[in-house]
Length: 443
DNA sequence: TCGTTCACGC
DNA sequence: GACGTACGTGAACGAA
Image (cartoon, rainbow, N blue to C red; front, side):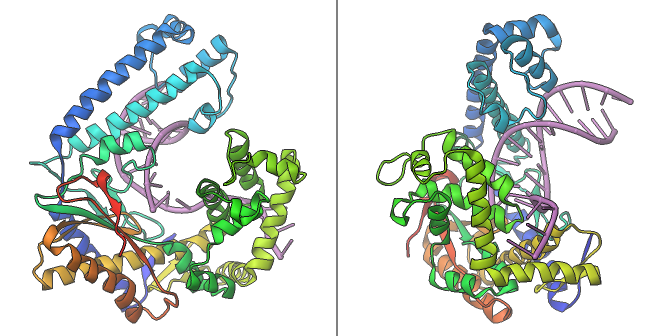
């Protein structure tokens, strides 16, 4: 697969993008080294504690007896052996978090906890400490490494710092601090991929949803679990957003999706907003087994594509067929994509690529604006659909104004293919507080 | 040294 | 109306 600029705008995006990202690379990110070193000690102690605990258990003893000095807590075949011989748990395939997490066994839970500690310690704490120069890290931001022409980041990777697990997130993100008197400010494009996709397929229903901030995820949640809209909680909405709507857009289908959605309600107790059990509600609606749930999800899938978004569905078919004839497709942002691709790739690449190009355009023009105004604010990184900056307190309001103007207004003057309003959400830490401290700024 | 597996992000 | 989730980086392990 090969992606090439096909016009001036495409070329300019890469040229100016490389320069702007280069400025951010030189700015660097301030790191609380002392905090990281303390975190390292803490994680090391926790790791030792868990290793001892595991060694004392039945499985740990067999492990030590069988493997002796070559015992590796990260060794997968060793773990597979112990699980089978000691606990009668015979796992054939993957031993990842998804599989082990479903096993109700204290030994297995300790193994997972140990994995988490080791990951945090080696990839994040040590990985970052090793890159610190005089209190700063200088991550690379690359434009030449990905097939879709998204970016990547390395040494250290600034784009996969833990955020979902609150405990690990606090340990690591507390080390990312602003320069003295500054705040860390992160601006995210809201639903940029869904919006860019809509610019390609122009489905009227989707355009209407996005123009009016209609809550599609909530409505899909009500359909998927067969409950009235008012019973949908944030948690249920999130499950459906991440396990139904997004997978659907990425080209997944009912068999995989139904499995995830079913697990979500059977492996933990989910409550509706009036305190009822979501699984009981499903059963009340005559969905008692997985196979009846699967049929139900199949119907929702069909309705989703053929009744709700038929134009989007047609676009996917036509885009794929055109590619098969021409063996390439062009993006709105000035690139031609050619070579062997699978269907899902043909449909996803232009969307993912163009969505990132919106971010990159904003990043470039924000860099230029800051320089022109001789501001002290520094862009320090970018995470696919968000821009992270180190902002002096007295430039905070001005920075947000410029950022909003460029990323939601000026970009639409430059690219007339953006037929929808773009929105950004801004989060910021307090002055002198870390990235972990960031809070939504309401304006 | 290199392929595989895992875990973190969007 | 079609057989099907996308994109990355890095660490540990273990065979070559």
